[in-house]
Length: 281
Ligand SMILES: Nc1ncnc2c1ncn2[C@@H]1O[C@H](COP(=O)(O)OP(=O)(O)O)[C@@H](O)[C@H]1O
Ligand SMILES: N[C@@H](CCC(=O)OP(=O)(O)O)C(=O)O
Image (tube, rainbow, N blue to C red; front, side, top):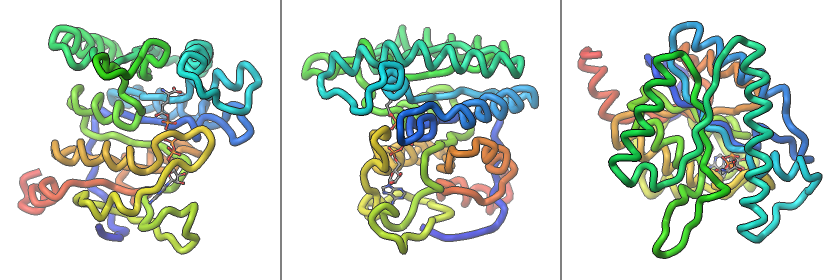
């Protein structure tokens, strides 16, 4: 782990952006239209610049709660799956409206684990991603919460969109995963519990000690907390890919990230550093 302020070397053409529920919904359950609109603007602008963008968006259950004026997440699986069904259709409708405003087409992909487990369906979904990206369409991905189950003999759930976004970034051979959350980045202690926690600007390898400072979720609406974000970063770094974790409050931060400005936490694998320090890239 390091703390640094130098300009970052980020050359990304195919980018996966993941946004968590806590960035899309205010603590009182209302939709954060400002963030949603700015996200649509930024991603549309990137497409106009010739970048290929995939959005992994959480929020189905949160928006479902909002639609039914509920403040607490129900405990039963069936109630959560029903809420996801209500929320996902509303969420994609809002995205569609906002992206249309910026002249940007979107497509929806709701995925379960088995889609990636079986070679044929994996290839089909990867073909779909490729076709959408070739046509300058932004695929908007979420887990298919309304059908996903997780039983001993029937594991189809991803469980969280942090892992799903890393799988999508890996399978689509993306250059970068930008993970937007309700926190400025990865801290050396859980900032909710330790006011003295310091932001780590760069992580070049993830060790068991890294996981020790990862705490749980920060809000009613989050799910995995920092642990699942580190698991996502670990998966990507093992494949020599990069991830930036940053605050999603103002999605314009994505422009800074792509310009190499040191915001958030840059998970930049050691091999990549060694590679570039030899002047090969
Ligand atoms: N070491 C840490 N650094 C930063 N955040 C942490 C850390 N440990 C725990 N957290 C918590 O993780 C939360 C982000 O995860 P989560 O609530 O699941 O958000 P999201 O909806 O964006 O996935 C932060 O709000 C923070 O409270
Ligand atoms: N698929 C679920 C979100 C799961 C999830 O990982 O949520 P989050 O921690 O907010 O990214 C939903 O759309 O409600």
